[in-house]
Amino acid sequence: MDRLVTLFGGGGFLGRYVAQALFRTGARVRIAQRDPGAAFFLKPLAAIGQVQIVAADIRNAAQVRAAVGDADAVVNLVGILRGDFQGLHVEGAGNVAEAAAAAGAASLVHVSAIGADPDSPSRYGRTKSEGEQRVRAAFPGATIARPSLVFGREDNFVNRFAGLARLAPVLPAIRPNMRMQPVYALDVARAVAAAAFDPGRHGGRTYELGGPQVMTMHELMAFVCEATERGRPIVDIPDPVSKLIARLIGWLPGAPITYDQWLMLGRDNIVSPGAKGLEAFGIPKTPLIAVAEGWLTSYRRHGRFAAKSPY
Image: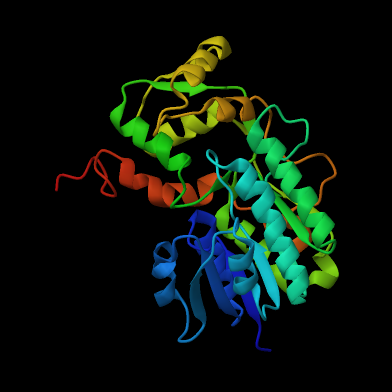
């Protein structure tokens, strides 16, 4: 069956995994990206004529409507950790849902986050929740996926710690006791693709996607140090100190953490008791240790070659 999926944010970290999961089904995929050039790397991964890349900023309702025209399914992956939360998480999500409904799309998958909560202390969490409400209002049959921390070879979280472990003599742990449930990007992508093609089973539902292991921030950093063979001491930063740091420098471009992120890390990022997750899609949960060492070895002192090798 010839199907067309419009994928917003396909050129991002999670987007590359979702795009490939869709390619494997034989569907045609229209990548809608604010910067189309950021998605060109996907072309060699698809069959001839299987991928189309268009310019679309989800804050622009006209561009969104053009991008979803004739689509059988629509997927929205757009999310940010700093910047225009209201425009992208709320207005943009509403634009996508309204356009998908108007175009007669059979399904819509909206990727949110476990931290989505109208009472969240962070703007990130509050706008994610408001975005979900806008999606539900415009497209009641949408599938909402809330992943925990998503990891993968190209992520900007595990790799950031690995980079610090390679350069810094000591690793500072901010919010060291915050618990998370890291989930593999490929597992999330497979769930998103399954939801897009089976709205009868998954439409109107909300899923919380977490991996098999709950880890604290300190434990995650310790794992990274072990996997990279960098025996760095980890120093837990007291909350009053890390709060002051986030307040003072969080607004600077390139700051390691914003104040809003600090607030977000004040809550655990784990699957709620009784919530449906990857098991609802029949997808086994991939442990971080099962795949992370495959790329974290590049951060070791001798790279992929054993340190004991004489060559």
